[in-house]
Structure formats: structure tokens, C-alpha cells
Image (cartoon, rainbow over the protein chains, first blue to last red):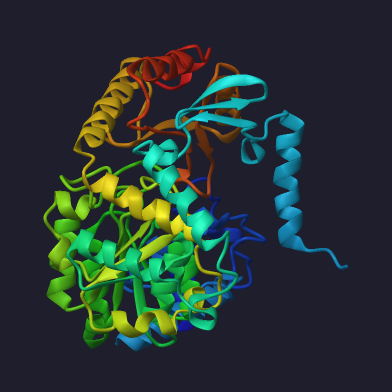
Length: 84
Length: 397
């Protein structure tokens, strides 16, 4: 799974969150809290969606430094590789 | 000093409350009149927002024990047990707790918060994995943070989701620590303990259960949900608090593991804090004896909980869980919930208001905690105050 592939899947998952607009404006550089305005609860909702979709567990302590869609995709890729 | 973004965020919330003229998080009880009544803003108020489940805070024997210890042993210990010495009574309380649970040993901490902080951070470290229920108390999250371990959340009260995440860990699952609560403080809902013990056994992991809100309330002896569900033998560590049913302050952990001998020395929240004062230890030892024999009080709390739950249900309120010592009314949007809370206070009833993100499901709560010391008339008065909220027929059915 390439990084760009994971980014695309994360963007698709973000659009499944309530009150989220179309994926057209979301890119790798989009900030999860800053640009998308996700509060801490919505971020955790997104984490659950990601965990189910990729069949992984994302440690809470790894999320502290995640600011953008691209950084989240990098973390997901790292965890997916570890499980493989 | 440069701007602190976190403090600015708190300041914004404080400002919002000040604009509303409602401050539930700065409430002052000017005088405590009894376990169930206080003087707030000049008004005699029913206290339904404490955790005084058995109503032992004014028990004459507990007060006498505290007074005797105060006179014989002084006001405080002035240091930590490891650095400055334990008093004999600290160890005696640990032996009392171990005997009460039928476990090999116990460790006493200075608060319930520190008990979770101290146990989790002593059991796990960097490179280890702790799996916690998503609705865990802040003390559990903070304990994980202090431990430096990988922290994985599983869906609230969902043993199958835990099992799925344990499977993903592979060989590491046997070294993982699983942390759950018996009864959850926000909604008062109970964990499926038997199923969680089965998952823990399947993978050979370690299970820690926080019984803060069920000790004294559930089980014939008052050991909590672990006793009621017959799962005590399958739980490695039970954590609890002195600040709810026991009517004091402090926390503890009991367990059978050999590690109990060394855990305290590996626990920074145990090592680097002052130990509990003699009066607190003495009153808690007396309260524990009372708690064990308090079948009558447990019956009272069941009756009071059922009465409040039925009364609020009949009024059309949505409640968080079946009847239990915590009865939580789902109160929707934050500002409306704050106004509702203020209305109850003006009508002589103090409850807790909880707002997101501290609440599950992104909904505000008006949380009542029931005491064995509440009279049926007080329970009815609580229901009457809820009924008098003008919005209750419109928005909360």
C-alpha cells in the first residue's frame, strides 16, 4: 500500500464523519484540527473508522504529534507494515 | 510570559460560563448539614451530586476513630511512606483491605486518582501495551501517559473489540495490561466483567479493574461488581477508593500477584507523595468494617436508586443506564444542560453537570448519585425538581 493510497483512503474516511464536506478540498497537507475543525471527540471517531478500515490498532500516545492528513497516513502505514 | 494556548482555551470556557452567570465547576457548599444536605447560596439543598453512597461521612464511630487517632498520632505524617516511614496503621489498613477482598496483599495510595496512576505506571512501561476502555476515567488515561506504554483504546464495554485488538498484538498480548472499570462514573453502566475475564484468560494478559463506583454498593459483602458477578478470582488487580462509599480520601489496590511486594517501590505516585494522615487511616479502617456489614445500607441504596430511576423515567427523561447508585439524565446540548443544572440548584437540588468531551456520546449529562442516607422524601423532592424544569416535556422525552 503506497502512502498516496493511504492518504486517499483516509480522506474518504474523513468524509464519512458527520457534517464533513466533500473530499475535494482535503489534501495531504490539510490539518485535522486546524483546517477541518475536528475536535478531540471527532478525531477519536476518525481513529475508530481508520482502525476498522485498516484492521489495525492506533495507540493513543502516537496521536499526540499528528497534525495533518499526511502525518496520519504515515503513522497508519507504519502500523500496517508492523502487522504485515 | 508568553501566551499559553491551553490556558487560553480554559479561560474561554470560564468566560462562557461567566457570561451565562452559571458556574457549576466552582460551586461552594457553605455548610455541610448532613450526608445528604448542605447550605448552598443561602439555601438548604439536597446533595445528589456527591459520591457518598453509604452516607458514612457523619458516622459516629468513624468520627470517633478519627478523633482518637488525631489526638494519639497527630495531624499528619509530613512525608512519604518510603522516604519518611509508614505508620503501623497504614500497614494495618492494607492488611484489612487484603482480608476484605480475600487477596494476598494490598497497597494504599493517597488518593484514588493516584492508585490508578501508580498501578498502571508500575505495571507497564515504554515498549509495553496497555489496553483501556474508551470511556475510562482520566486517572486511567493519565496512568497510561505516565507509564510511557503504547495505549490502545477498545470500544466501551465491548469484550469482542478487546479480543480483536489482543489478536492484532500477536505474541505481545500475553504481556499486555487490560484496564476496565466495574461501574462507569458518567452513566453508571456496568462492565460485562465475566466476558472481559474470559478474554483476559484467553490471551494470558493481566487484568486491572477499578471498582471505585461499585465498592460498598454491589455484592453481598460490598466488594463490588467483581463479587456480584463472581469474577474476583479472575481479576489480577482490583483498584478502589476511600473517597466514595468509605466517606474519606485515599485509594488502594489489592492483588494476589507476587509483584505486589515490589510494585509500590516502582510506583512514583506512591513514592513521591505524602502518606495519608492518621485520622484518615483510622476512620477508613472503621468505615471498611461498617461497609462489610452494611447489607441494610446496600438495600437502602438499591431502593433509593430504583425510586429515583423510576421517578425520572416516569417523567419522560432519558437515563444513561438501568437503576444503579449513579443515575444520569441525558441532557442534550451543553448550554441547555447548564441552564437545567442551575434550575435544579435554585430548586434546592445539587447534582453534577457533565459536558463533552468528558461525557460519552457527545451529550451533556445531569448526573445524580444516590446515597443510602437519602430519605424517600428526598428522592421524591429530587424528582419534583426535575419535573419543574420547563423544558422537560419538550426536549428530554
